[in-house]
Image (cartoon, rainbow, N blue to C red; front, top):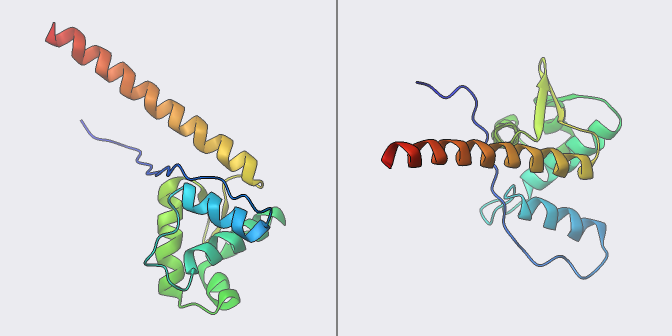
Length: 135
């Protein structure tokens, strides 16, 4: 028995930003979704995510080379962050180009919530089956 699909999302419950500042709110969203961490000192993952958001809103997928050039990052750094974002299911690729799964942040959060609900339903189903067998 194998697992055919794997998606990893980390949710960190954090106090919402009090100040209405788009950069703080975007940082909070990414931090709450476990996308950014302390080791990312130059905020390169944040920058990749924001650039993907901009390009997705324009409905223009972008390559890893394009992201690297726009953000003045190495392609290796960009690919590392793209792989992490792909793993969450928030980013998709079309050929050799990338974009967010949906063109709005609220839509993205809704999709993540649906993914999590499906994952919890699967957990519940298997737990119920195991409980039956153990009885």
